[in-house]
Length: 257
Ligand code: NAD
Image (cartoon, rainbow, N blue to C red; front, side):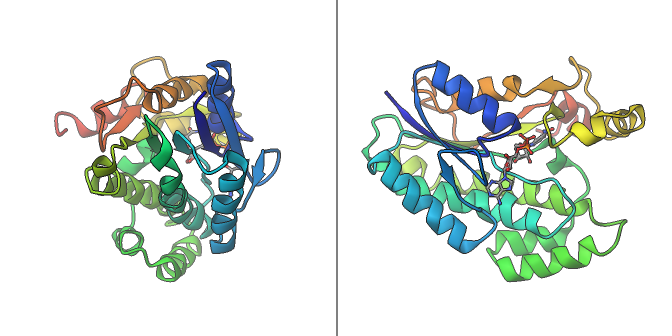
């Protein structure tokens, strides 16, 4: 059986994906802050190091897939630490454990929010790998109600760009590992529940996220795509950021692909 590491496995998309992979017969090592096989806090350097150590131990040193799903949507600096640095550390830190796999695969989660307004300075700091600088910039953005929302979009934009740059390189494609990302639209999970609860919130979402096809999606929808991306069938997808968003990317970006 194949061994899959799923971060964010206690809730939402991560939970649905872990369940789907287990049904498919994979061995899943779920990672989260609580209620998971491995508990680790991806917002800190110690937590990230502990994740790698614990997964190495639990897996016996050989894994077949990494699904970096854990994320935060709050307009706070911690979102920078989890969504960008935590996700990249998960992928890079666990990558050596893929070397014993015959069909190694890796995927992370961006978002259709990467198409929303973002903060160029924060994206540049993330891209430079400057965590203290990025946290300081996020602190400034978080302090102003009119800019807090730029934090999440910036982390997802920077992560999508990281995948585009890293995937074709020596460490990933060069090592036979397809690395990709998905960019979900609006998925019904505890992350979006507060907004989806009220008609006002739903209207606010619809205004920013046009969804011509089928509207809001359940967590199983991105889970199916994630499961395929880490399956043996996926031999040639490389560096793609796949929008599973009911068409919002097609509407927002039009024919600029
Ligand atoms: P969720 O809140 O239901 O689940 C996220 C999980 O990540 C939680 O279990 C949480 O405990 C975990 N997590 C948060 N901080 C962590 C930390 N410091 N260390 C370890 N684990 C941590 O949210 P979800 O909707 O399932 O989101 C999953 C991913 O999908 C996120 O990256 C999110 O940004 C992305 N996404 C979600 C949507 C959506 O509409 N729900 C849309 C686009 C992208």
